[in-house]
Length: 430
Image (cartoon, rainbow, N blue to C red):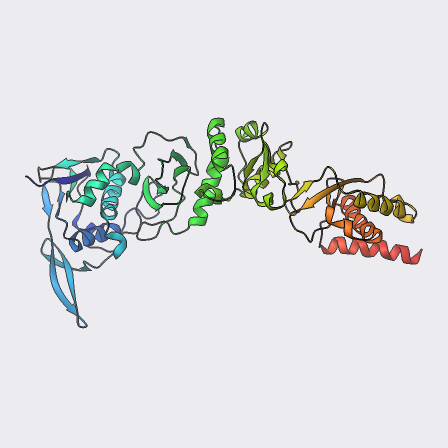
């Protein structure tokens, strides 16, 4: 049976120096291009030679021939790469193990072809010749090469028509079942793990190392989150929320950082205004009845939504990002209620009554056991754990939270501390 080769052909005739000048790249600084290190093509050739994969390269109709020459350096043997019979300073060890999978050299060759023209030829061929005005790579059809060809869309998304949404930060694609997370940089796969994911993503903002592998996963998650915030498709937003519903882990998207300055689109409000939410992080102190009918989502996402939009039903969050999450208790213990009534009455019998005008008091469970009170938009929130405290201690908590409401100063700040000292000093000199 005649041996088959994978043919990758693009317009323009490649120069021999592209295989010999390490670090030389005409694409560095050009944001429209995929490659910029000037090493990938050399690493590809080294990997093909190292793994004994037969290949041919044609610049126009002229073949560029590659061979190896055995060399010895400091008691170690190396195979030096020769181009058209001329020895170079490069060896077959270049690139390392990251380039030994079939996808790595093909990815680089195909990426270079894309940088030269849009209509790259990718097909099997038995005619081992080049054509005038083109650059042609012919790579032996091995098991790894065949897997790549059959699963082309898993490695390159530039020809994938199923893009769900696209903006300046990233494009969003469907994720086949059990495929894991795939990130593409400028259409080329740069990250793949078996971690469950709701979608795949392509972005020119992803940064890669010289092995063409993602090297800053956290910044990639920020880019993906920014892309999601600009989505204008209501059904796609709802699909994301439904997929994330139930916790704050399990899917790649659970780890996205939505705290960036980019604003959510109006579509996000249109979807979320009709839903009810609860942060997954506060489930530890929530009761089952608190979660009924609510989407359980990561706190990071809900805080970002709550910060931008008014009127969303998010249990436990306030407009103040520094505030502790809480859940309101509808039926606090009578012991606590009576103690609070006594504390307010006691304060109204002092000169402080002029600063305490019909306080709105709510009883809550805080995420942190150490938090006993909090001011929230004119209301005084008191922890149900105060039922073990004395009336005097409860009165002090009410004073502190009331002063937060009056001044707007945050807790544990010098300006609030100075305010309390001023009040204390005024009382002294009276």
